[in-house]
Amino acid sequence: MTIKRTDFPDNFIFGVATSSYQIEGATNEDGRGDSIWDTFCREPGRIQDGTGGDVACDHYHLWPQDLDLIQSLGVDAYRFSVAWPRIQPDGKGPVNQKGLDFYERLVDGMLERGLQPYLTLYHWDLPQTLQDEGGWVNRETAYRFAEYARVVAERLGGRVRSYATLNEPWCSSILSYQIGEHAPGLQDRRAALAAAHHLLLGHGEAVKVMRDIVPGSSLGIVLNLQPAYPASDREEDVAAARFADGTFNRWFLDPIFRGEYPADIWDAYGEDVPTVQDGDFAATSQPIDFLGVNYYSRSVNGATGNVRPSESSYTHMGWEVYPQGLTDLLVRINHDYTVPPVYITENGAAYPDELEGGRVHDAQRVEYFKAHVQATSDAVQQGVNVAGYFAWSLMDNFEWAFGYSRRFGMVYVDYGNQQRILKDSAKWYQTLVTRQDAGV
Ligand SMILES: OC[C@@H]1[C@@H](O)[C@H](O)[C@@H](O)c2nc(CNc3ccccc3)cn21
Image (cartoon, rainbow, N blue to C red; front, side, top):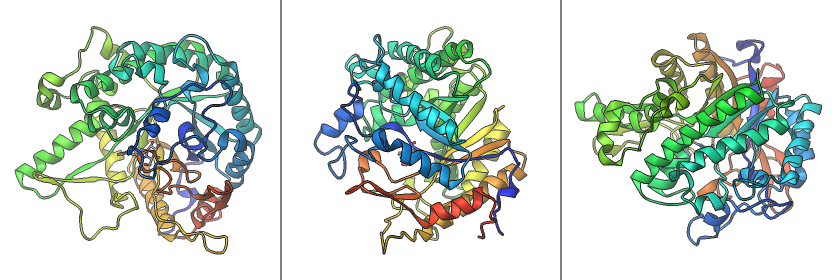
């Protein structure tokens, strides 16, 4: 099998993705306020290597060369996120014009290079001042988010045609307020479920506001979805997989596409369920123009916990390489829900890359991308309306609780001198997207 660009529709978008906190640095520059990640990184023990996003890839200063790099790959689009604390340092009220100016220059730079901007409004960097008032557990934050969305849309609306409200509300709620591995690092399921609800409410309120400001633009949301497979056909394993699917996938898909929470999981959550007010589901489920799917791996669920199939290979994050899971996931959501066009907004892998003679031979990552681009094509062939694929990530960057110890980039970053070096995977992607018939 040789996956080729021509295996996809002519208007299929290939891109690369990043996020503000992971690449920008300049956390104290031009009026930017603190985010919850600046606070979290200062708390001892939170980040595996004790680092933070103060410098990261210094993209705030190196963005022209980084856009040149993206352009050199031959991709159609660039998925990036706007840092709320650069736009409203206190999360509400006064707007920081220098922050808006930065993103205006960045977007103009994309357009000048023929790159389509795919903007994400929120990729986890909540202004700390809002967290001081409860963060996403506070329903008011949903309304502050819609106000922030208005500010961005009013400034960039003439240039940007695609807006995702949230990146991965599961991570911004469950991982952050229940599991506690991400900022703000709380461990309270009731708080996490309230946060999840207010994130989805904020998504809905922001879409409502943006419909008037940027008519004709494509508005959507990005979910991390993970297909759950039972370890065996034993009833208890099947039940474990259904519960995992419910808490990870359906708890977010259902309020967006069905205007309700899944009854089985609602019952399982008992008294921890969120307070739902009249009109909330009308907001969370209003029509959107695309669904972004971040896919990395699957889960294999047993009654006594997750299973790690011994015959599979695993990435540096310990995630199983399972490309079939992407096809299965896309076919399933296309069958179970009435979905708009789908973008794979993130897909990629971390491996312990070695710089050798100025080269990085990341053969495992090349194979990962080939297999998952093929899996995406398989879903298209099975009738799923997939409109694009964004590789995670353009370049190595701050990998949240893992700091800089995990490299996801197709471009290597030497943090000592901020040099960018194309890995073999970047070269493979370049041949794919520029129709040079990349071989398998
Ligand atoms: O971990 C790799 C990327 C991360 O760098 C992105 O900022 C984020 O959007 C992202 N989401 C996932 C998948 N979801 C996930 C699940 C468990 C823990 C952390 C992320 C992977 N990634």
